[in-house]
Image 1 (cartoon, one colour):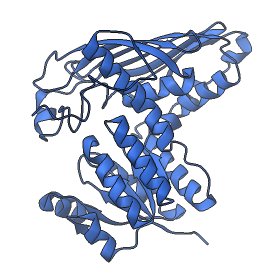
Image 2 (tube, one colour):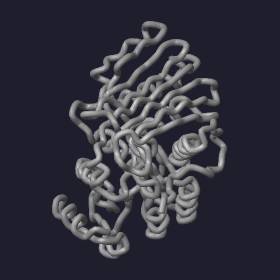
Image 3 (tube, one colour):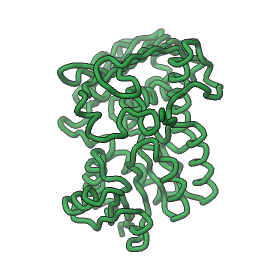
Length: 355
């Protein structure tokens, strides 16, 4: 007998449609969307009617009307902490979109609140479940690349001024940040997951083509504890459309480059011995045209974890790990200095209003 899990969405913005579709796709595995809420009544109503579910303007009201097993927090990044901390008292597990918070202190409060309430906290890092990413991680863990030498992430996406103008919080320090905290956060997580801890970071940024508080373009240099080096090139100023979202890893025994828009395709796979090159890029690619694949697989992992009592694939501590690097990048941008990863933010603007 399939055990049903009731899901509710907190926030009905752009990404919420993907979450709703994925939950619907997993009906046979027990997932059921029982309600959505948004502080904007018209947006909540439109979303509820589109997906044929009850809609509310607060999760307090939703919780009085519906039993919820999993809350999916899809509000602006700068509000994640307060929403998660309040939801921890309602019971049920919590899934929060990336980044889990904008300030390290907020991430710590979220983790503590969920621990105190014995609530599981999942941080959405769906790119970890892309098929090529999974295979590369397996090869790195098996030592197939030998000693890791260098890595890179290139995020060349297009976000015109109209994108930022759709919602007043986009591109602000208090609620969003720029390309590093938003669009490139998944790629940053992948580099950490594959390469290990970062020792220090240097960075510079600019607002190249849009009028926002934060950056739309950044270059980052990483030095890992292992001695490996890394580069992050991230921009939303690519024109006229998205170009790539790629990750590459080079080691003493070869290199692998994953491309596409979200590192979902194999571009290069060249390893020694040659027998390790026996991969079929088509078989390892995500299903063609399935933009929901990563989110669907992540939700599947959440369902499995809750049913079996297992540990979240990406819990609060793991989510904090990448936030620490993101904070260090912003600290390096503001200070113009090399920043060690065990640091206390003093100049990082994330989560701080400019007013």
